[in-house]
Image 1 (cartoon, rainbow, N blue to C red):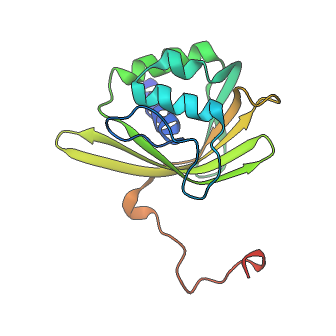
Image 2: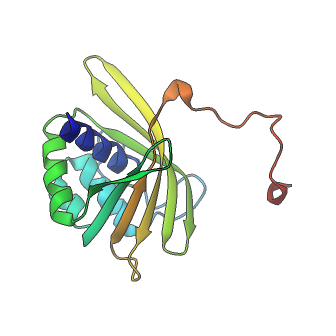
Image 3: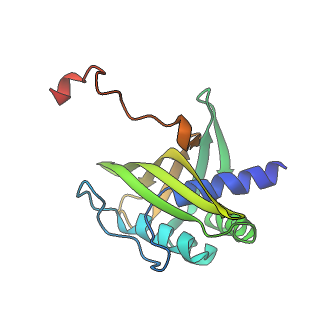
Length: 173
């Protein structure tokens, strides 16, 4: 059960990082707010959308760590190497149908990239969706992903945009 949960969390994480139309297996280099999505993240998502753990592995460092942060802020290690990640994703792809992801609200701060993910997949004749926050740390050369923090997924009905009457942060005024 723990292994299946771990694979599901990995899938949700990797689905978090890009957008793919059902017939196109590439990821746009820019998203809606004009922020360029770093190449390793594009590669990772393209590999995910192709169902190719091997292609995903080319986007991460040999020692890439994937961590999951729970609702209490505690972090647990999902994988600690490219080899582990590829093995877990191979297992995951044998259980998933038609995963799709979309990246929005991308923010780049030095070698850190955060995004809001929207992930959907088919279960029977229904398409299910969930959302979450993901943070990537790129290697110094920005050619591979060094670490990832994946935050708890939320169901579509539990995700709310800020209320129109919510106070604005001083930097937004």
